[in-house]
Amino acid sequence: GAKLSVLSQSELYKGVRHYHKPDSRASTHRMVEKALDAIEAASDTRPPPSHLWLALKKRRHKTLTQKWCAFNWKALHSAHKVGDYWRHTRLKDARMPCAECNAPTESLEHILLECRVSHQELIWKLVKSQWELTGREWPGVTMAVILGISAFQLRDQDGGIDYPLTRLFQILVSESCYLIWCLRCEWRIGHEANPTKRHSIHEVVARWRSAINKRLRIDWKLTSKSVYKKKAIPQRIVARTWQLI
Ligand SMILES: [Zn+2]
Image (cartoon, rainbow, N blue to C red; front, top):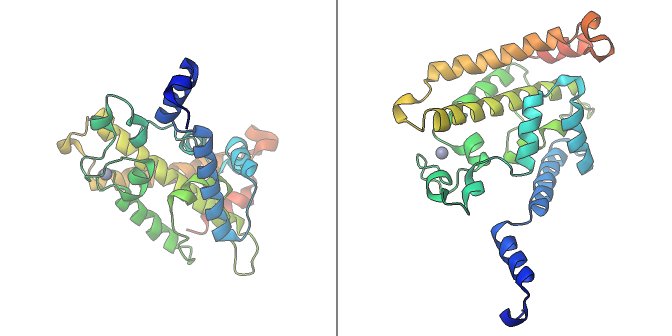
């Protein structure tokens, strides 16, 4: 390695900066590859990375909301102010861990799939019981599936892409993750993690039902040709999505 004496001031500075802030482009690349792995595992096809970004931007048939796509984009760039984000700040001890779970890092993955106080467990139970109505096997949700949900695909028995089933899965996963995230922020930031101010089970169930019902209503509204003209979602797509449950 370079001797300290021969490093210029700026090289030294770069080195220090690099140490504090790992290459975020490399990290985003890893996240995207992880997401593509999950897509490939579920559908036997691996879309190019650009497909993921385009899907978030284009929002075909408005399956994913604008709010979700912004959330998903930030997640792929590790831009949410959770867990590791606080590592090199003076708020590290207060903000980095999940004290309730005794987890050293409150990562997005921890919040959405592991946390004991984010209500994620209850919400995923609700999703799975709703999914049972489709009569199809639950595809399972991992952080990679969540990150790649915009380009996720499920196949039917004949090996073709099952578009309505895929669309339903995308709606359920994105809406449920977004609700878990909102509940977490309301409690941890809004209520300063006050244990007496946690959302009740009743409240969480009502919020989840209302989120899914809202999506159903919006989906039908978006089929209006007189309002949305060429951008209207075809009625048969909406009908085939929701008749599954
Ligand atoms: Zn936790």
